[in-house]
Image (tube, rainbow, N blue to C red; front, side, top):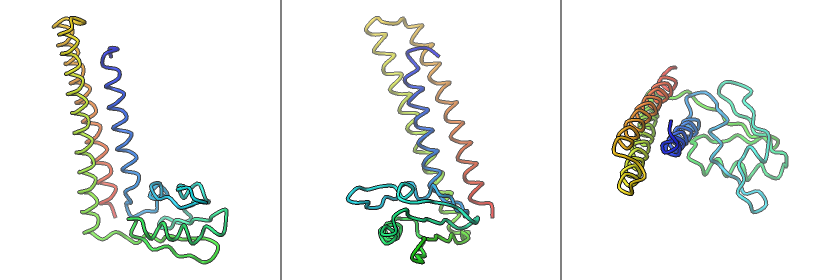
Length: 184
């Protein structure tokens, strides 16, 4: 990898990391505490992630339990979960909040796999945009006589191989997540 392609490879890696974090928030029938990552609760005037106001645990395969450190936060956490797009109603017993994840219906699984494929396609588009930006920068460098035509051609070839590598990685992740969702 050359110093000219390094920043573009870094951007591509960030795209993959972003896709991973997106996939973590998609629930696949099992309780995964990461589904709460994007939900914030009003903690003394500051929007704060749920995992920073209480203990989040998974005592059973389809159950998430949230035990706030401050008992007065129960209602706020319950409200935040109800307002989120999680689609699960919290059970509040006055001490802890429980989220029971129902089995996913076939229809819901199919919808989730479509979502997974869309996120994968968005990531691929981002990778291709990074490739385009890289090629544009190589052409500008050639025009400014910073690199030769041969250098530009080899840099473009290097960035193309990188694009294909990351594209294949996205396909693998998408396939694995879809398989995870469809397995009952």
